[in-house]
Amino acid sequence: MTASQDLSLLFLLSNASVLVQLVMALLLGMSLVSWWFIFRKMFIVRHALRRAEEFERSFWSGADLGTLYQAATSNRADAGSLERIFESGFREFVKLRKQAGIDLPVLMDGTRRAMRATYQRELDYLEAHLSYLATVGSVSPYIGLFGTVWGIMNAFRGLANVGQATLAHVAPGIAEALVATAMGLFAAIPAVVAFNHYVRHIERLSTRYDSFMEEFSNILQRQANGLPQSQVQTQNTGQEVS
Image 1: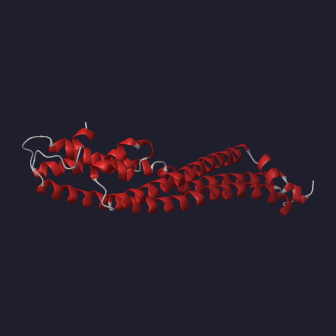
Image 2 (image 1 turned 120 degrees about the horizontal axis):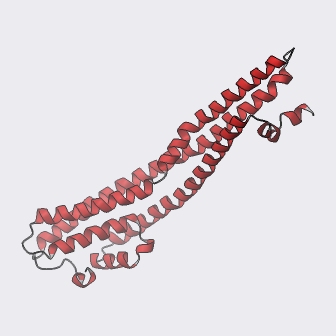
Image 3 (image 1 turned 90 degrees about the vertical axis):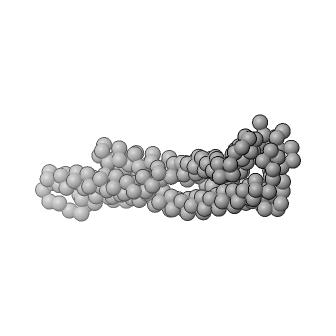
């Protein structure tokens, strides 16, 4: 067998010790799952950004709040997080406005709490599986290093049965051990890059949602001050909200 065949990747993987092979299989599985989450998160974040831009464009164009609410409730399957936050806050606002004798602070506090609860659910959805990417990015190099240390130990242990140690005897064992470290880095680097990328975008979306909730609360508060207590905020809202 030639030296190039001895040090080929397939040969190193197939002739590694059982523990090193288990480490490599674990790292490969972790890498495949992380890539699945990376691509899935890419579509989720893109959808959230696109829907937030579209809804903000409609909201600040002066559209009637009742019309926006009706559109959000009729298109829940494709609704974005910002639409769901708006829907929950507006629904709670109208429901509390129907109660006789309710104070404005109580009305606005209930509206904000409804939006905050939906905001937290949407944020949890956006952040789902990010902890897995962080875990893969932090532990994969150490798992690969463990396989490397074990492989090198086996390589040096095998030298005890050799009368005269040469580089040809040591190289295959060390090479197969270093493959575990390479696989650990292969699993960790994309996970870390994706984690930092998505955390940055989700933080921007979180700030965007939080700013919208404050601005929307101010709009509802001004309208509540300017309307009689028994009057619904927008035309036909009483029929739209059950």
